[in-house]
Image 1 (cartoon, rainbow, N blue to C red):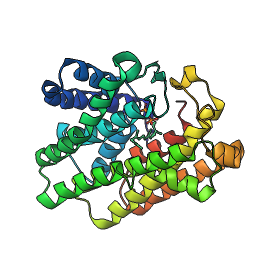
Image 2 (cartoon, rainbow, N blue to C red):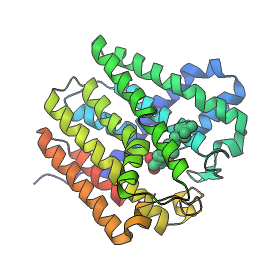
Image 3 (cartoon, rainbow, N blue to C red):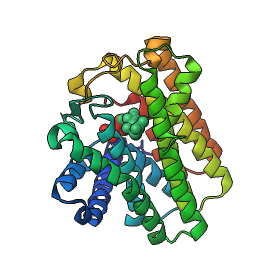
Image 4 (tube, rainbow, N blue to C red):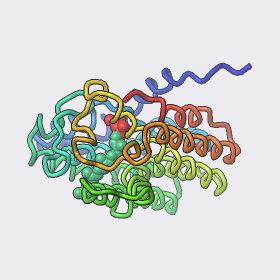
Length: 301
Ligand code: GRG
C-alpha cells in the first residue's frame, strides 16, 4: 500500500524553498529601488502567504519529469512577484482600501501609499526579467523561454488578472450573471493559477497531451479556489483569514451570494473533480497536484 501524501510537510518544505528563491529575487533588484521602496517590496513579497502559485508551478514541472533544483524555484518565484504586486495594489485606498493582509498591516499602511505604488509597479518588469533569466538557467530553448514569459505576462495583463480586477471593481454594488462571475474570476484569479501550471510544464519540455491536461487542471482549480475564497469570506473571520475588508463590506458579487453556501460548495467540489480527472488524463503520476487540488477547497485561509 502506498503511504498517504504528506501535504502539510510538502507545503512547509516547498514554501521554504519558494521563500529562499524570493530572497534571491529581491536581492537582485533591491539595489535599484532605493531603501524605502526596497523595504516596502520586502514587506509585500516576503510576508508569508500560501505560495500556492509557485508551488503549483514546481509540482507541474516535476510531474512532467523536470529535475532541476533552485532554477525552477527561481522561475516559480516570478509568479509570486506578480501575485505580491497585485495584492499590494489591490489593498490601496483607490481599490479595496484594506488595513490587514496575511495577518499584518497592508504594505501601504506600513510604508505609505506612494512608496507602495512604486514598489508594486517595479515588481511587474522584475517578474518578467526573473522568468526570462530563470528559463536560461533551466536550459530551456529560446522558443520555450519566450513562451514561458509570454504565458506569465498574458495571464497578468488586460486579458487576465488586470482585466478581471477591472471588471470586478466596476461590478461592485451591481448584480452580475453567473456567466459574468465565472468570466471575471477566470481572469482575475484563474489566469495566474493556470499560468503556474503552464509555465511548469513548458519549462519541463512536456509534450502537448500532459500540457493540455495540466492546463485544464489549472483552469479548474482556479475557479475552485475563487469559490472557496468566497465561502471562506462568508463563513470565517478577519482574524482567521488575516485580511479585511470582506467582500460583503465591498458590495462584491460572490458565488455564495449568487448560489447560496450549499450550491457554492457543490460547485467548488465539482471543479476539484475536474482537476483530478485532468491529472488522470495527463497520464503521469502527480500525487502533489492531486493533493493540492483538494487543498484548494479544504484550506482555512
Ligand atoms: C489597476 C485594474 C487594475 C489592476 C491592477 C490590483 C490588481 C492589478 C489585481 C488584483 C488581482 C487580485 C487581488 C486577485 C485576487 C487573487 C486572490 C484570490 C488573492 C488571494 O490569493 P491567496 O489566497 O493569497 O493565494 P496568499 O496570501 O496566500 O498569497
